[in-house]
Length: 247
Image (cartoon, rainbow, N blue to C red):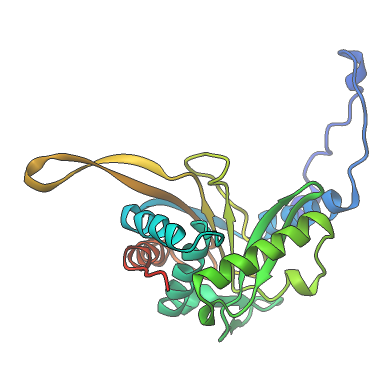
């Protein structure tokens, strides 16, 4: 692989000032480090992204009811998705693996730690919420909020960004219908969320009803995971969310 990339043409390095006014600002340390890791992951991992939508109509109604019954405790859609991902990891344990550095073996993880991508002023950081299989949605929401706040204000240690089973990157609070998240090595997959969409669907007696559909974008390492399992993994997340109960 190194020989191939050595033959690539050099990066264009022209004088942009000849076209008009410009300003040059150095990238900060976080941007440089994050960019280097993302470049490595994109080049080293054969990415495939599977896009689908899952019905969260009943889940959103239950989440709203839970919020009304528990004022002061906020649960975003992310927490139930984290629990659903844990359920899918248990059903499809190949997603909870990592390739060894030499590519000769797979490490099968028996824990369920979920990475959460956080948008910070210094760039994207991924904090890891541990033991998600043992925590309620309310606890996951609290832990995630605390980790995100620390990421934005103080930054995260390497220990707080390591050991994930799988990462979730959510753009739902901003928008979008799909994207292609880059796998967070050494994990095998990453799940992207975008904004819930209203879709028409047939109801009772042929009537039209509107359903709330959550777009999911699952990027995965094709050396480890095949397309059929990726499609089944996303559908399983949908089933987990359809029967989710707030406790």
